[in-house]
Image (tube, rainbow, N blue to C red; front, side):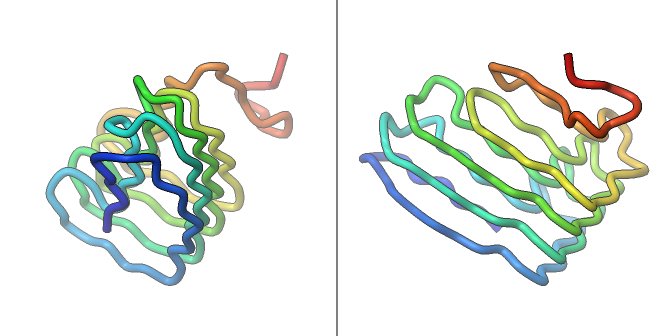
Length: 127
């Protein structure tokens, strides 16, 4: 499943709910806005299972773009990918009540800027 506009200044609000995405090439869910210059995207991914998608279970990126991207990921299971959940650029990604396990690379690959961690995460406390 992908949201991948290539031109213009898209504005979108979307919900991805109760999806099963297994054994897909490149990604299970992709929200990619790196080729557009402006716009706002707000998306919710919830109650879904992603398994064996390579390399990304969920990928959110707006690298090189001035788009505003906000994504909430809640009650999602991601396993068997190289990267479970990957975010790059300047998107705001909120991850909660989800299981990210059994991925061969990083479970969570966060190269966003600014880069923060959940204040309730016992392994990576917010500073």
